[in-house]
Length: 267
Length: 183
Image (tube, rainbow over all chains, first blue to last red; front, side, top):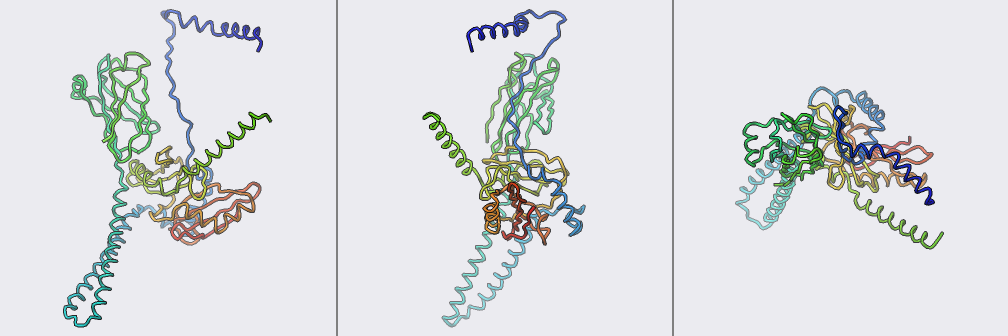
């Protein structure tokens, strides 16, 4: 670009932005409309999931209808679905009982063997012991299955704690909502308020959570807090652990752009 | 092309190869993320059970970097999906439409095994003849099994430009191909 063109571009840009530059330095005027500027939270592009199912839902519905026509409603009735685990437990129990019977029979045979007289019968005893070992091995496998089932239980929990007192005083309620999920509205009790005033903590929330990145929006309500803007809080709880999130309100209200400091730890 | 152009081209080729290799190394079988998906689903609804899963990223040798798991809760009356990559739940969202598929049992052959069987049976041959590739693979209960509505099945769908696609259905309990069709 030639220097002359650059100069003309600068002049044109100055002309376009001049009114805004003036406004930026102007004193607020009485009666002028108030404009609130909020920072937009940057969001990552959404990932697609189960795309094939969504794109071919008609095909899947047709297959479901066909299944219903062919085999009747026994798979789609009003009865509750059986937990597959209960079937597995029954199967394990039946196998364990069958083995118990086998081992009882073996014990009877052992008693009869008190009168063993020949060496050839000792070989039979060894075979019996090998069978017992095999049964123990199978019992171990069943225990391992039960252990796997137990380990599958969800233990990822989150406790949200509140700390600090804002310059305008303790709010009446704290609202935090999960993006695309539930909204929790917690009223602060007098005990919570006095604990916060003395530098302590107040517990807002304690529940199991999905072990994934969680996006919360935190806001406060109460006298002098109407219209306070949401503050985004992002947290990635550690799986099968007790996760703590501390929200510190002390800087809230000091300036419109002030963000809420947070702290996380795990037990 | 100038000397620098050739260098840049070679560097880009190396970069893309490295990216593709890293992608393949990140790929895992469907069962890898199952435990985590169950954890999340049972937080959402205690009665949730798995009804469907599919690859959320391109699949190679039955492994994919990201898998989607769909659970249904009779108590809530809806289904919810979890997309898991590198041991992290990347997406958690409700399905948005009814999909009353039967529950999947806990025992099923993993995606790599089912894929290998489909490839051996007819998938590899189809790809060689038509230049096609795998478009999707999913695990679902009963819908596609020709005889047993309780049997879970893996379905591997191959597609090719200008040719009808190929569906290969693998019994997820026995690991054997039980059905295939073009379309």
